[in-house]
Structures are given as structure tokens and as C-alpha cells.
Amino acid sequence: MVTGTGSLIEVSSASHPDLWWGIRGAGFNFGIVTSATYQVYNFTNNGEAMSADFRFHAVQNASLYEFARSFTYLFANFIYVGPLDEGIALIQPIIDLGPFDQNITMIPWRDIETSSKFGIDAVACIKGSFHSVWGLNLYRIDVPTLIAAIDYMDSVYAQHADFRFAFLAIDMYAPRVIESIPDDRTAYPYRSAVARFLLDVGFSDSSRATAASQVGRTARSIFIPTSGANTSNIEVYVNYGHGDEGQLGWYTERKLPRLNELKNKYDPSRLFSHYNALEVAYSTSSDSPRMS
Image (tube, rainbow, N blue to C red; front, side, top):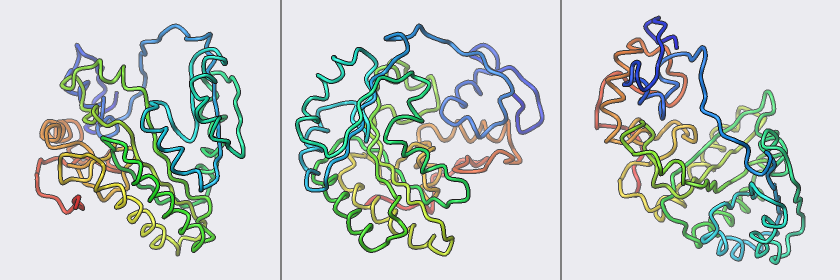
């Protein structure tokens, strides 16, 4: 790894363990990884996963999210690493709701990002387009809030035709591996989050940036009161942050002092500060928005 000071170092649990702790949760803040050694695992289900996409009419909003409260793997898309018949049995309650469109296939692991979710990731990566991205950690799932958010997005689509490609997602990942690693082993601070709110408002005319931000800020505010957070900071996984949450929102008060020390040590000139970056000094004061 080449750090912000220009040093070429090896980083591991045995070599520069302080930085090894920091890059696992705030890695882009300290330098460039020039090579990496990975721990790999044997394929599950021969490397094949079930990918199930569904589209529902808005009137089915409540039924879909009532199911979401008790089903761990619900996205806009379901991924099941196992035989197709087992996967279909797990999502049968969703099938029974009667989607107007569905696509259930077996795909290789390497194709999950490009083939699942009806290809929505490709829409988010169109060259030359603009995006206003908003996120929030959810520590509990509140069905009325989810319904209110979808109703709000219905109104956005009706009022802003150029925001028709905006999408709101509730991401839920299996937590077993994350929870198996003690909190003090890495800088990642949000093991207790059960889901993440993500809104991406895409648009082609840069003059619409203010309107897009207002949509995002309003959507996020719908989730804040019922998010289950035990802090006044707007907490968000750093890669989902809009940019207004501040250090405390991205890294938490318990992790931030140590991270700021690492930033000052390995990148004091803040060369690696493209987005949602650490400062070189710790401070609990913030101009970031607060939950209310």
C-alpha cells in the first residue's frame, strides 16, 4: 500500500496493525492498495445462486413490506445461494402476492450485480448522468414508514417526469459473518444495523440538482423518526452517504478518535479525501444534520 505520505508499506494484522484496523471500514482515507492477498472460500452450490426479481403495483405496497419485516434477504431482488426449488419455497409468499412481472433464474455469482434487479445497476452507471444519493442506517423495519416512503415516491414521479429513473431501495444483507468479527477488530461501526435505506435520484440536466437534493432530503426525513438509532447523528454506511452527515455520521464517536489519529499519521495532507473523508483532527462538534 502507498500511503498519503508516499511510503510503500505492507499492511496486515502483523504489519502496521493500526492501519489494518482502519482500512477495514475507512480504507479509502489512507492511500492506494497496489496489491492484495485474499482469503477465499469454496463455492456454495457450485457457484450458482438463485436470483428472483419481482415488480408489484403500488397498491400492493403494504403486503410486500409486511412480509419484509420477517424475511432477511429482501431487496428489490432476492438472492438465494442454493438449489432453485429451495429458493422458490422460501419466497413463495412473495410469489403468492401476484407480481405483475417476475424473473427467477439461476446465475453465477460473478453475474449477480449485472443480471439481478432487472438490470437497475446499469441505469445507475450511465456515463454523463448526475446522481443525488441519500442513505440511512435502519436498526428496525417499520412498515408504515416504508409505505409512506413509497407513497412519497409516487408523488415525486408524478411531479417530476425527469426523475422517473430515481429508485428507493431497502438493502438487507445476511449479518452472520459481520457479527462473527468482534467490533473492536475493525473500524466498521454499524454491525447492529438490520437494513439500509438508499435513494438514488438520477437526472441529466445539472440545473435540476437542487430539486433532486430536496427529493432525497425529504425521503430521508421520512425514515429518520422510526430508524431505531440511539443517537442524534444521522448514521449511514459511508458508501451510502450523501455527504452532509459528517464524520460522526459515517464513523461514529467511538471509532472516530482512533481514525483521526490514523489519518494524521498516514495522510496528513488529506490527499485521499475525495468523498466522505476523515479529518486529521478529532472533534465532536459538527455542522451535520441531526435527527429530530
